[in-house]
Length: 324
Image (tube, rainbow, N blue to C red):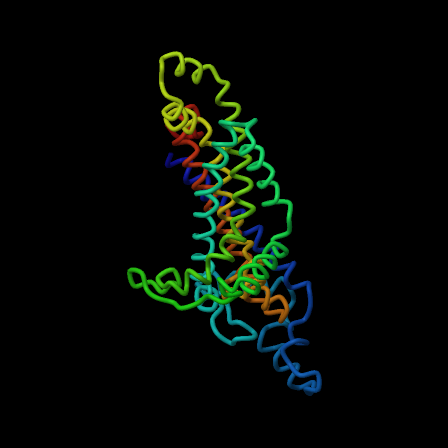
């Protein structure tokens, strides 16, 4: 296991380095932020001063080396728009995104897996067919369109929930979060449900497919022949066997949900990292864009590592190369 972890960490370093280069080149090729930051009527002297201040007069390779040197010292630069540390800016918005994703993942898991189990256990029933039909909507209908329908129905027409914002913030174990207040829950429940739909649909279909296949396996027939109730067979035997692909997809989808909550945060005006990156793209705030994308890469690398470890623990047939 130790050899496996060391090998994966070395691979992670190479991947993060390569992706940081790709991200840096991509972001720095989309436009000149000076054209956005200063007034069009500013003098050439002011324009040149800003260009030199942000190091934009340097060759691209030198800008990248400077970026790597700053990262090595824990400095990700300053936001060109907010004129504060990028690290502080991103982490000030991160709690809002994390709590939104946490609620979304809980909703997707609490509904998706039981619904998939039932649809797989009773695949020809009316309820099972209805569950599968509804699951298609989760990943076939655009998120922003569903979000606008939710706002129209529950905020505009019924007036049950607010249309956007984070709501009142309280504290849980000293951590500020909107999940500590009733008003915060009223604000988070609709965007979280909207964000959960893709993951929920995927979990339903994946669980259902595994359930249908497992119920036809020999070990299930033997368990039934011994007189074990179906509830015990499903939760003690079937769930263990179908959990491996579910855990794999679950881990990757958690990363995707966290990284790509941009659309939901924009539709519901949620003050998280996704909303920040949209604003930064519009304003060509390069340091914020680079930092966000590099953090997303690191996030996926860490999640892949955790999923591989959990995968090996769930399936004793899997042997990690270099482990025991």
